[in-house]
Amino acid sequence: MADHYEVLGVARDATTDEIKKAYRRLARQLHPDVNPGADASERFKSVTHAYDVLSDAKQRDNYDRGGNGRSGGGFDAGNFGNFGDIFETFFGGGGGTSRGPKSRRERGQDALIRVELDLDEIIFGTHRDLEVDTAILCASCSGTCCQPGTSPVTCDICHGTGSIQRAVRSLLGNVMTSSPCGSCRGFGTIIATPCVTCQGQGRVRARRTVPVDIPAGVDTGLRLQMPGSGEAGPAGGPNGDLYLEMKVRHHDVFSRDGDDLLATLDVPMTDAILGTTATVKALDGDIEAEVRAGVQSGEVITVKDRGVTRLRGNGRGDLKIAVHVATPTRLDHKERELIEAFAARHKSPAPTLSAVQQGLFSKLRDRFRG
Image (cartoon, rainbow, N blue to C red; front, top):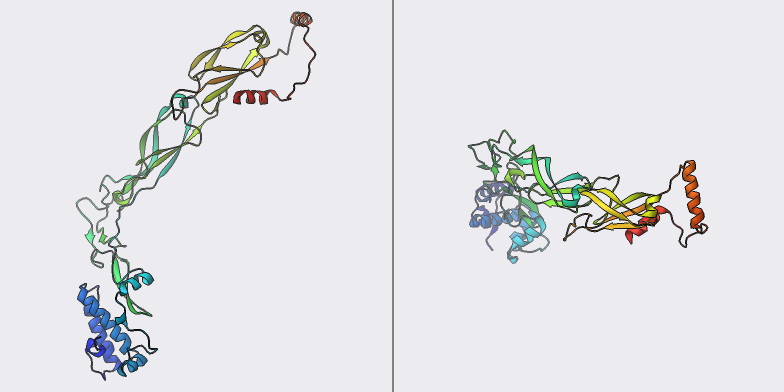
């Protein structure tokens, strides 16, 4: 191992001030920020180690008596082959290494829009032109962040590396650490003349129209993903994604059960007795529903393939119509006589409780689900 006095270029009887002046002179010449050469880096380590030993009275006395310069009989730096691994473990920067400048380009944020739909729109799907307030690419600088005709310049502090290396005193001696350059914020370049339109961001906020084809069969809570339709990224970075969250509005007549549509048909008592054909105004056109003679409240008339188009798959669900027999509440004298005559001829059994007691709406619900 080289003699510490020779490394610093001082006599063995040099004073503390002479040792300090010699170290400062050599450090300015060999510091990695000034002299990036490999030889200079190794010499800088040797100079720093020599100064650490000779600037401490106990270590210098131990060194002059033939020791290794550590007052406690510690370790010799020459016994470790690769300090870079140790420095990187404890200080994150490694032996003066740098990962290079970071990019200004970043991916844009995702955006979420809630879309309200009517029930009839989801049967076959629909088209919407959505107005979105979002970040878009700056048309003036095309994402370069610079005023047109200019470009970023290399940072004169970090010389384009994006980081600054410094010597930090530690238990292991002086350690080279790397931190982001405060002048360019780690980018390695400086935008001297930012674009006046976007203030050097490469993007601006604006309203834009997004055409969307909403498929049939969507339901409340479903989210559709539109890749690349979200916000533009800084400095011309790629766009994020746009998510559309569906909400189906309440309908006064029809409700939905999966791919089926549900409705209730009020049938007059006479039609329930004799049977009839009812014209039902469905969401996608009129339907002729056959009401059989003697139909009971709670029975379900199923009309095939008149429900909602399936989101994943072929075909449509069914339209299920629950019958509600409407009993007249006001009768004139003649009507009452006719009903009484009918009752006398029909001789219906006395009212009794059903085996399962349930209300009309529960009965309709169970029939729908069955």
